[in-house]
Image (cartoon, rainbow, N blue to C red; front, side, top):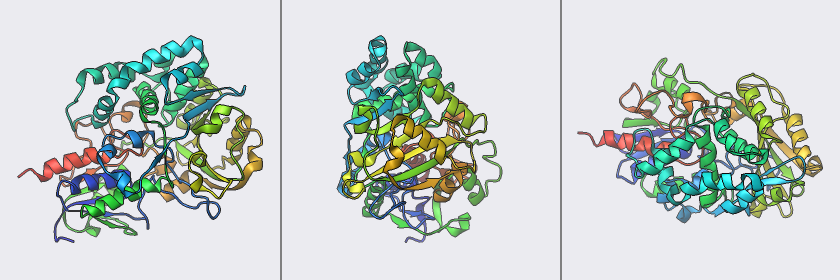
Length: 472
């Protein structure tokens, strides 16, 4: 290791690894330090239940990963990353046994909403697809790391994206489309009436139509492992099982980049009360299942979908989000996000068996047991589900935070994605990746563009760092 590194990265999650890669491939010397004994952060894979059942403790389906502007510039396939596409990216079943779907096809998606809303959905989505890559790159590079490549397309997208999703959903006459769209917004645990929540739903929908909602072959760990292998080939170093409690624990460097929560950054870097106003959002209660067979969904569309949203109506979803985010109570019935990787990746479980992943939203730091409420909701859409369960691994907010210190109080978004904090994180600033210390930066999901396994927070932070390192 050189006596003075150009950059040290704290935390080997997707954003920290991406920041390291981006600097290393521009010729800077970098080293990553990770407290856990393996890399991955929110993109890991472990045997949580029974031998041979490989589960993703956090992220599992990756619409933003396969669409990521920065991942698409990297040769990650050479390092073992393979995207597997289920027949349907996502299904949203209803209590009557029918389902709306988010398909690769706009037409198939629109048709699943029924004739009264098919045209409205196509008019909303189709104008943006031809310029999707440019729009996404510009949207995920804001606020100040790059000039827009397609300013007119971005402006048109912004007109639809900035209002609350409750406004956008007025375009739809029936609840099938509204419920599916409400579920898309709920992926960032954002109350439906918040600013720019229309954009959240539209990004997820457009991502599905552009490149799908795949899983990573072998599990989400494959993403982290590919980034790590690429980084090492570029000359970067990765040190695991290395907990950082203060800056003095790290080797000398020209820049320090933290893939951590703002709370941890302030503590380690001695930044005092710099982020005292930063808000953490609702937590999650997650269950990973080993199943004796596929989930017995009543809706046939759900049987071939990689991701399945569980919420009986848009009102039910909105009520669940309000309960967890604002009313400080666990919702019943909960809104659930579920992923069934083994419908497309049989390597994740023994022959004929399946892994299944689900979580519901609960208040930050909630210490109850949500298992019964979750399984009652699953049985509503998949009668006989409990009969398929071989084993389950449950993780409430405290367990989620123990797995990943960025999930403060069980908040997997590393900060409330509501109000202005959805867009201006970790504080209102044109330079969100910098801190009060000129050599210290932050690159976690607490910075724009926010949560998800896409690496763009790491890319944007790295850009701010390399501009500083090149300044005489």
